[in-house]
Image: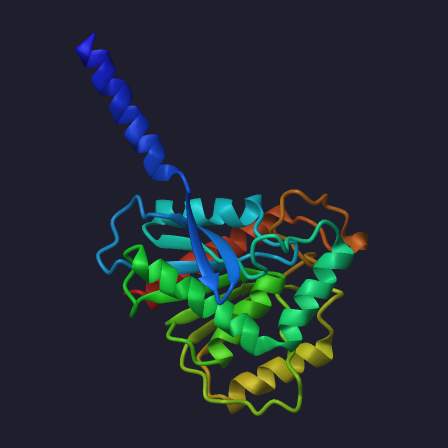
Length: 254
């Protein structure tokens, strides 16, 4: 009997290790709730990754990404950008919230930094941090680089790339990887060109991968595969972009 109890407790311990931990923190009076996944594989540098969710806020996709990153050996933290009590219930509300943080980019950058602080508190090395984001979160990943946050690299999955043309482009030290659907109708060619010009002006170390037959939100399995809707899942693009991120991290944290 003791043997079976020991095996059960060991199994329970392993299961708990793979679960996300809820982390409560604040931005002034605004309560925030993020989710932390401790690395379950070897991580000699204690590298950490921030995950910035899409415009509907923290979702299953962001949490699954955190757990997958933990399995790869990275401490992962899903950032709460909107704050507790502010999660949108529909796309109209999501558009307003995302629009606010895109225009009030300093507030967006602050929320990202607060998430980084929490990731470091959980054991990640402050000198070995990356930021990834999906859609609206992909925009945030680029903003982390633009603001000069202390991160080694950023990865944008089908994110918006634009910024106010009146903003002066500053030097960018973080390495930048953009993973983009070649047929994304929400990111016009003019915005892509402006972004690439910005990267050159900022003397950034940047890469941009295009995925054929992929539109917006191509990593989101909860969507169908109908590209005519503008946002659709694409299995090949999803897998290829994840592999590109993994290769980027191997170089980043070597």
